[in-house]
Image (cartoon, rainbow, N blue to C red; front, side, top):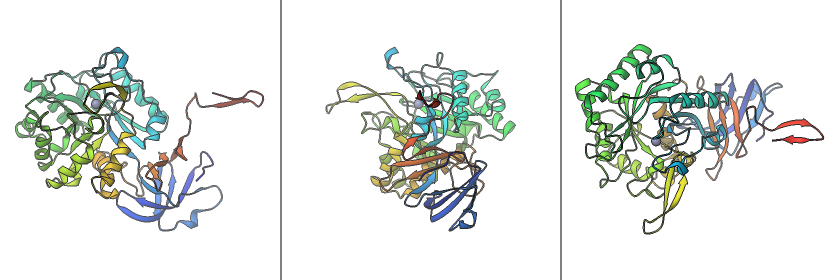
Length: 410
Ligand SMILES: [Zn+2]
């Protein structure tokens, strides 16, 4: 497949479409950043002035929605030499992530909320949908304006607040402060109609998700407004996985993190595909599950006996990697596995009218998978960001042809 650069209308022909449900061979007409039409054949639109792209042999799936990613780089407990660089738009695009919700990490003073908002501006300008949570680990939660409620109410890109629950490093044992924060999200939802998510980093303390059940029982907070993440943990580490099963049955959506994968060296983590399989076997409905990359953080590299060999950076491609592990190792069909990083996440963020599915009216955010499950092409907002497995450089520092004699300046 090739593209002729920017075009007002694009006709993608002959892909095998997962919307995320499998709808089979479809043509898709894209314009104004949206999907305009889908049909078995839209041959009548294939005329001059329209870019026609043959995507036969590829599977088109919705662009991935990653609701927990360290856009600025996390520096968790790895010291000054363990600081991770910021992600580029190309890093996200090559991972198939077309909607990213950034979080502030442990280094919350130096790499704080305003810098994250600036990063969100950069990624948005590069063609992605970039969003963020206000707050961070500690309570009272840091904010940009006068309160976290004001951040959600007045800054479009702020989808809710991140906090830490039952976390040793930030032992937020102040139930009243957590209630206050939750109350602010209830108010923000009422003021704005936004999802105003309480996004909870779950730590390893014995209380597990007890403080979140309190919010549901005492405050009447809808479980759908609370997203507990990093819940794919062994029972030896914390009761949080068990609690998460209960929370999902109450109507909440629970979020697994790729970066705590056991196979990749985290002794307290459960692999995402194992967590998904265990949840489904326990009777948790598929629509109550999601996973996020929690990527661009340092992680330990361990030897066979568990000894520490060094550190590495977890790349955003772990989201796609775990999608495929869910398909091939947990035996979940692609159409169902996709919902965990598309429709289920978009619904939780209140973005289901624009994100997470392929149908007319939705944003034209697509990933094309080849026969080997590799990401072959990515479109965001109707523009190609990846073609032939390579990112298309964008922005002021993209290669520029200055003079024929000088060639390409990079
Ligand atoms: Zn994180």
